[in-house]
Every structure is written in structure tokens, then in C-alpha cells.
Length: 234
Image (cartoon, rainbow, N blue to C red):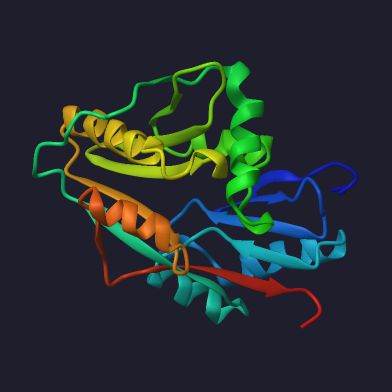
């Protein structure tokens, strides 16, 4: 295994990729439930990463049961996140601004919007954008209509559970109603497919996003998420 190019692989019940800009950082996403993960195998994976120059490994946003597993093998808290849910029990109003299906040619614009909205740690690159789109069996990417995208939403569906996986609006267009339109468009799509619950997460300090989600019917859950971190030199 070499880190001359970004590493992207699956092993021992987790999916790993290194950062395309800083290959001393890697990101780990569990693809099996905690009961099927083996601590010794995950530790072997971490040591292999360290031998190839990786200094820090960050988990995806994981729930409390997964957090306990990774804490037991040496991970520590990096950042807590809020988890919100929507039961889709009420009628969802029509979006006040038109949206359209995103095309592959829109992806550079989507990445630019993402970079303008999120801090460096949370920003998508081309690989993580593709991963987000493919994270669920069914997904859609929507952008605003117009000459070029100024906002986008990635919505996923697995059975009767839905996920608002990413929402971003360029700072120059925030407050214009575009974010609300993208959220309601996503909720209506999921409601038509008889989804019973939609989940979304956001950073605790992102008050603007929290207010938007709560105003569109999301409620905070007690079981939040967290990103954990493992340091090779600790």
C-alpha cells in the first residue's frame, strides 16, 4: 500500500480514504454494525495506516453504540453533532423556488459551493461527493434553476428511512429562500415514497442551519452523533 496517491479501500468492516490534500489524514466509515467489528482487526488497520504515513484518522459521524466501540480502541472525541429527525406526518408545502436535477457538469459548481460554506475539515472533494451520493440505495442531487447552481441538496433513501445528507447554499445567496426550497423539495420527494422518518445532522454551532431545519419540521433527538479521532503518535 502506498500513499503516493489518495488511498481508498475497504477492510475489516470499515471503509478508509486518505485526504486528497493532506495524506497524513484519513477518514474511516464503519460499514458493519459494532457487534460485527473486531477490535484487533481495526487496530491492525490503524497500524497499517500509520506505517504508511497517516497520522490522524477521523471517523464519520457515528452514533453512541459505534462511539463506544471506537473509544475502547483508542479514539477520542473530535466534534459532537446535533441529530434531527422529521416524521413527515404533515403535508409538506411546495418549494417557493424552482429546483432541478443536478447534472454531472454541475459538480465543479457544487464543490465550489461546498467549499464556500463549510470549514476545511467538512468540505467535500470529488471523492467524498461521490461517496455521499452513493451512500444510500436511492439518492438524488438537486440544485436551483438558473445560469449556474448557487445551492444544492443531496437526499438519500434506504427503504422507508430518508436522509438529508448535504445542504449548502453559497454565502452570496443565503437568506434568499433557496435553502428552504431545497429542504422542502427533498422532504416532498421522500414523502411521496412513503418514507416514515428523515434524519439530518449539523454542527452544534451552526445556528442558521439549525433554525432552518427546525422551521421546516425537524426536531432535535437526544441521541446525537460524534466524529472521533485517532492519533498515531499518542
